[in-house]
Length: 340
Ligand SMILES: C[S@@+](CC[C@H](N)C(=O)[O-])C[C@H]1O[C@@H](n2cnc3c(N)ncnc32)[C@H](O)[C@@H]1O
Image (cartoon, rainbow, N blue to C red; front, side, top):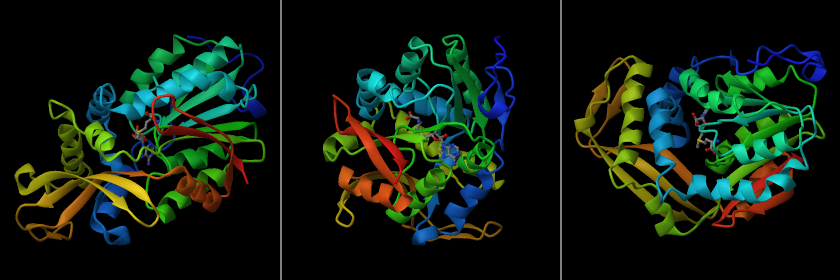
């Protein structure tokens, strides 16, 4: 395996060997996030956090789904990045630290990294996600592919990533592909985005991908697979929550899994969500859980905001779009954001 060259990374901070997974917090946050959203009902809703879907089996299931022919979200953003990689790469300066916020499967970012590699530009790419085994598998494909693009992983939460990035003063590129940031009710989403904006210095950039498709049937179809893998993926989150909360509070037979899609008026959005509805009363005294029959838990909620609403989020976070690109296949957009 290659090692750090003599010039070293930006601002002289020593980095480990290429391909290393750096533990910046691991999965220590997962029980806390699960508990907070499920038990304490922020915004008056019970939510199964997406972190419950981010263990190794969860990410393997998710990766399978992204290959489903109806799951346009992945393929359409790949088409965008393939088409515009060269224009996007023009904004990336040599020596940049690139942090891929919630990196998931790395095939999406490859067209951009391929372009940087072809230009011979040295950049330091860090995939940030919650599962060590998954990051290990994903990195293998990159380290054998690139020389100039030096690849690492950050194993931890977004909060850990924000803390870690404080050590760098060199140029930074944040990647938020696949609607990872901005996908929430506006006050929550813009607060999350603001944390990353605050970590940006003048000259730093963020490439933010977002799904603004408002075609209800297309969106509904994308969350259905012929063999029920999407249900398996979502139910896996509930099963994993038993482990995270150290209580067997979830029993599959107690819960019906539904899908919903609706247009909300203010702010305008098409919202798709999975919902677990209690088929009978469900209690867990230790956790303080008391569900009456018919009560709901929301999971994997997707807010498809039109681009004007998205821009409102950028404003609230102190960011502005300097450039943007649209997928040749649908309303998936990537925005090049800088500090306002
Ligand atoms: C919707 S997927 C997007 C993946 C990829 N960026 C793409 O566009 O295909 C979101 C990713 O963020 C990760 N993630 C979600 N919440 C996280 C958190 N709080 N800290 C770290 N990673 C998180 C998940 O594990 C998942 O891989």
